[in-house]
Amino acid sequence: YQDDSGAKVLLLLGEVGGMDEYDLVEAVKSGRITKPIIAWCVGTCASCFATEVQFGHAGAQARGDMETAAAKNKAMKEAGFH
Image 1: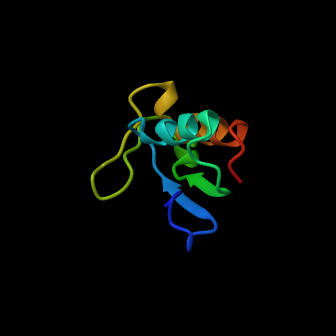
Image 2: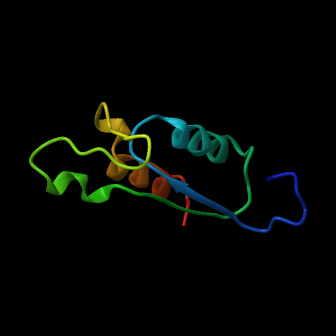
Image 3: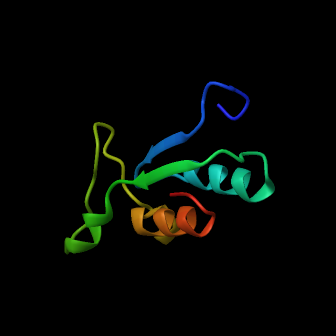
């Protein structure tokens, strides 16, 4: 969508588990993506539960601190995402 002149803003809805959101963080930091990005990673409520929580139809689950919604949202904010 970076190369699509009709796309003025990018929208990202991420989830717990996996590391794909960090690929976009690196693309922004390297200058490959320059368009504004509005982003949020769902699952921030997972830390409110005493046991592990699965989200979504595929049972998305954080398998480490970097895969949590809170860590991903922090990284995206630090990279300039809105």
